[in-house]
Amino acid sequence: MTNRIRRQDLERLIQTATGKLLPTRVLVGGRVLNVFTGEMELADVALCGERIAYVGDLKNGGLQLPDSRRIIDVTDKVLVPGYIEPHAHPFQLYHPVTLAAEVLKGGTTTLINDNLFFFTRMDPDHWTRLLEELDRLPVKMLWWARLDAQAHLSEESRFLFGGDRVSGELKRPSVVQAGELTDWISLLEEDENQTRWVSEARKRGIRVEGHAPGASFRTLSRLAAAGVTGDHESISAGEVLDRLRLGYMTTLRHSSLRPDLPKLIKGLLQWKGEIPWHRLMLTTDGPTPPYLGRGFVDHALKTAMEAGCPPVRAYQMVTLNPAGYYRLDEHLGAIAPGRIADINILSSLEEPVPERVLVDGELVAEAGSLLCTFPEVDWAGYPTLQLRWKGWVRPKHLDKLPQASEGKIPVLRLLNPVITKLEWRESPEGTRPNLPLDGEDLLVALADRDGKWITKALVRGFGRNIDGLVSTYNGSEDLLLVGRNPAAMARAANRALEQGGAITWVQNGEEVYNLPLPLAGKTSLLPMSQLIPQTEEFLRRMKEHDHPFHDPIYTFLFLSSTHLPQVRLTADGLMQIKEKKVLVPAERLN
Image (tube, rainbow, N blue to C red; front, side, top):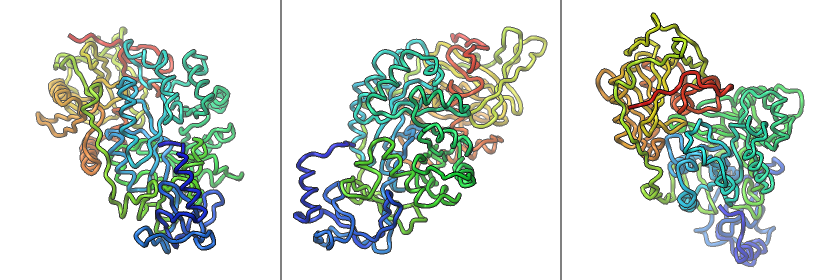
């Protein structure tokens, strides 16, 4: 998406607004939500190409109707701006094209995307070429520039977040945000790279997104002083207010991992002060495919209103507020003259799922179906997005449990889908017990994609009696294994690797689930219409094995991600995150 308008297009826009040219399209008879004032206005909307030339009564504006084929009758309908998702992760088993195709039907016309998956896997030239391909999609694609990896990288990978690579990302025209800043401790410790990049972002007018779950008011204050401008990690109304008081643009989250929005809205409505709605946004924060079946930003809007949020305020949080925050409000976020004509046509303000969707002045979706063609991306043309595994997993790599130097076995207890608590278990007579295991005890292991090392622990709270479950979808982009049977785990692992990546499950000697992930071992090439039911099947099987939480896919992602407490699997070994201390070293593979 460009934030510029060519001179000839501006001239045509002026001529249309002054009645010298006929509009290219007119929406007549609808009620328009004015997001600036909160008013509902009976108005016609005249378009000139991709932009809005006039909003109001056409006769009073001195404009004439075009040919009837260019008129859309929206009598008794409500018109609102296209929805903006300010915090998208376009690689949660899906990729940006399949995500965009799905969410456009629900009225999301702009995605502000995490670049992490592509930044760590692609060289700058290939990434530039992919951005150009994605720029052809009907959904507008804007991007973050990550400043840290969110996982403990191997030595050869750490160069990605050093030197000039990040600075180059900050210079891209489509980048509107730095972060999300998961390694904010380094910024407060005045890390040279972090402070340089935040300074560059501020000079370029780019926002800096924090990631500070559970942070105290004092810590949040220090981060604000260091240049952080927004945060989406509030899980209570009190945390929302802490961020608002410090001047943060505060994003209320309703994701498959953290469906917190009803509690946040209800808590804010109980506050005795005046709620600064203009400093709030909504995000779905990267829902996994099973939850996309419920909707995207449209679902978050519905949830907010059902929790008591005034409808106009809810719509402002997904249109004008993010557009203004990211300095895009001259172009996006409103149905007003000069803005891009991204418009959702609703049956009522209380029903955010649009009947029809316009993007750049063209009708692109109707009744939940796409009317436009999505350009294909030649994923095979990006060789670094193909998983390369240089070793194979054998049962002998998994037949013994890990053990600390004092003879105790580390146990990760899952407190929720992503937070772990470390426990220690005495080894029987100081030995290293063999698998298989019974009941809730499962081995969890992270194996190097180059076949050099493996890090192991016990895990409890993930499920019961799982023989061998393997995922190449995880935070460190290695191989994550969970199970009680070494032979089943090795079989599942090698089956996943044969396909260039997968989630594969072997139970009772049979392969009971397999989802190929050929794009860097993290992403399916299936359309969402197939991916959603296939991942729903995975959730169903996990429930049959007593998985206690609602989103095991995020558990895969975060078991090797080093920005959350308490203990994670890394290339160096089992790491205690706060102290960055290796408790049990990784074992060498042979």
